[in-house]
Length: 70
Image 1 (cartoon, rainbow, N blue to C red):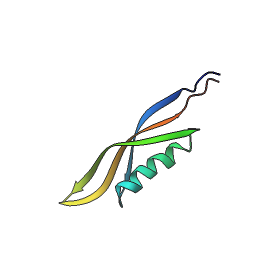
Image 2: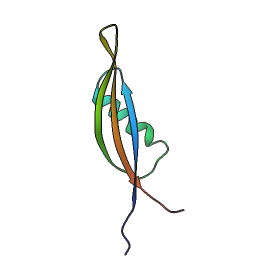
Image 3: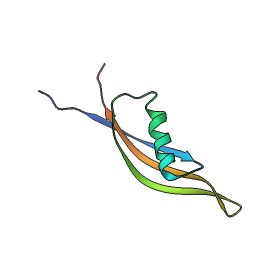
Image 4: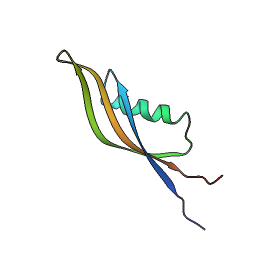
């Protein structure tokens, strides 16, 4: 029985509320076009600042999904 193969892509999600929402938004959006999502690893968190105030949270993540040869 052969093992599985997974592809890893990098995504950046954004939110005006939190890093958790930003990461969730990235995964939710990716799930609309990718199948068999497996693991999301947050690699970087940052914020967009305007006029001294946080206006957006950004989460960079690596997302893996099962590779299917079709």
